[in-house]
Image (cartoon, rainbow, N blue to C red; front, side):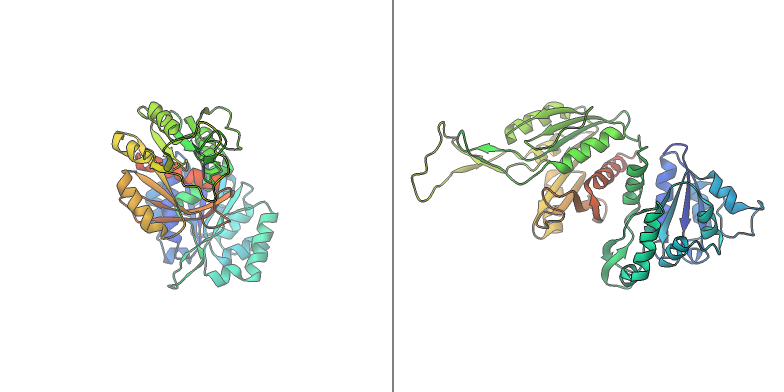
Length: 396
């Protein structure tokens, strides 16, 4: 984002405070940021807040400015425009070409890419008029980041909550494909599942596709990192430019991770590791003779816990794939494994479980409350995880 000219348009919703955090994220990445606010937005956040964050004057009125055409001046200056939060009112005006204040007039004059982040009551979001307006904007080439399901200002849960600023930034960075904030960093990632042999033919495995780990490797590479991927068996092709080590068993995965662990900046255990292995692997195929079959299993090494014990300056990221009591088990795992960040997701859901292209997670750290990501493409979630890891290093 370095040297990019980013115009942030803030409209009047309770989520307006998040726009200030987003502005700060852009500034920290070297972008030049200017902010314009609707009259309603100023009831939630003052222009002074954005002026302090961006060190730029804030646009609030068409006629209270030294320039005779401030809206055109801002539109011509802009490399990318972000409308956050985008209320139903502003979305309707954008979709229908209405320009009756500074924000909508400047947006109508802006030729640069536009990113719209809606936030509103769930009933307003699901209304046919809003759906028509969103569809029209998408037809016009405007990028839309849908709201997530969460606690709304009205006091109940529904789809209309604006994603967290980190998720918004990661989404824009993916679309722009210009993020290089991992340049010079070393990132070690595990992916896929492991297989534990029963005999020469059979093995114990799980449903992991490896898509999340591969997405992390791809996005880390795009963002400039030197990436090592340790992968269990998958049907995926490792990204060109990533150093890849293929393993089968949990023991092999542990050895590879420990071999490369010491000099890494960020380590992400995205692999779905087999917790148990067969105590004695049969040398020959076991014949189908008996009606029942008992296998004696022994516990595999806890790789994430071992990495947590050896951790020095690395940021350690773990995953918790659960089917029930997600936050309870994830919080417990975060504490037990000495991880810096834990990504918890519900794998019982078919739309975000093993093999899906989408994911929805909670991000847990020891210092902050869990954050819901909302439903994202796995590449988008990968960017969000990497951005969180950088923040934990104090470099974002």
